[in-house]
Image (cartoon, rainbow, N blue to C red; front, top):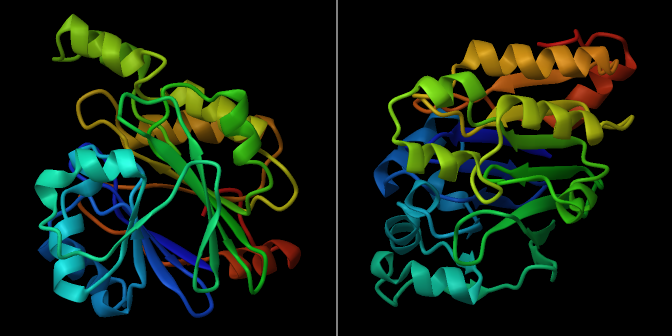
Length: 274
């Protein structure tokens, strides 16, 4: 399995997952044109994407779903509540498939397990994606007000994680947002701070976890150096030896081959943070 992010933050979020034969997007929060351009930049033909799995209706996760689906005929997988909330983005000609939180479904050789999250959306979910060919398991959770017991359970035993690290507490308090917005971000249905992300990452450590993307950073209340340091130090203290990368808003990451990370670790070639 390979994974990349086309970008992540309040301006847009999209994760690319490549199985042995199947290619999916989890969310499509950029314009249709931007999604296609960013896929091209990492060597993935937009027309080869087999599905877009939509986690919730917020525009930074859905902006391009209608345009992309209509242009390439790509099926959209949504909960009924999310589909209704995204009605303004759809014309009715897009191929759509309903799914329900707690009910896994298959797209080609990828199994998707959606589970409910604590976030201020109509029907918010996060997902794990498992390769039925090799068993590699990826967890994607970019909008979490709080890491509930159910979320922790759902994200157990992942080989690779995409975790939100949205804000620094001090920068949020001193930032430009009014008090009401600050309260919403820091609430149990808002976003995870760097320290909360670090704590969750440490709770999810197990021998096969080889990599983490830190995603959905706030431009106004966080910075990549800060997020990386907080999470890195916590994981280092817990003895973790793996790959950590902070995802930028305006640039896609390279495709990361999870099996190659496993091989490098087994041969002692994986530095603490590459």
